[in-house]
Length: 314
Image (cartoon, rainbow, N blue to C red):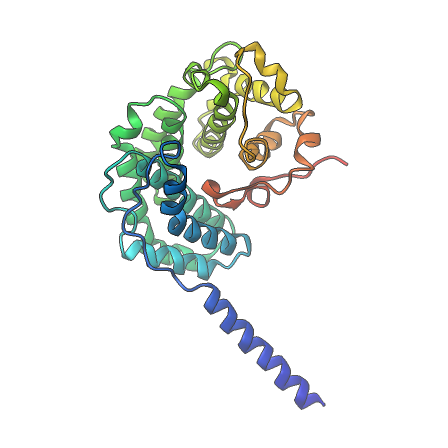
């Protein structure tokens, strides 16, 4: 009986290892990401981003499971192929590549926080590729001329990759982009460029908070307090959004236009509340967070609650 148990245990381990290996098969690297605009051609957009989103989903799930060897296999496989660095003919691809690079960096920040020595050795093959993504984001006129939330996202890309790659010039360029957003926040927490979105203005205020809060969190490590800048502007924007989550009609204080939200606006794109609550202890947040947890944002390394969240009061 003992021999049979040993054989069954061995078979289970072997099958488990085989299954893990199959689950971590590195998909063919996507050489370029060049979809039509999200609003220009929704069906064409959705089809074009599928391979990249599937890779990110696989990567983030591996990170959520703390399968760090798989994470490194995936990223190194795409890094060696210089994936996503092919030509972009439109504009949407620049946004997608920026978001993807941000996610890759956030996954690696999770790995490094977990103290994986293997990761430090293998990062040498990955960080030059991430740096190229960051430089392409930094120099993308398709982003830089917008002066809106996409610039803030580019800033987070630069700070996150710069942190992983230990490239201070990228971090500094990212901080400059975050500050552009912070100094655009008005007295009531409003962003004039996002108010121009009309019925999507509230959505884009939520979307703007994600890169600003996470950039502020990352640069705290350098002794820089972005939360304090422009008279605590990030807090004003957060307050505007928190009020709107509690009562969507409250957004009328900054826009008379009736608002339309995406299904994810008040779900995973509220992921910024995790580090924000840990930092501020805002008592309004736990009732909003508890029924929505875990927050999982594909641009931020997967399960944000697991990576950034704290304990909520009972």
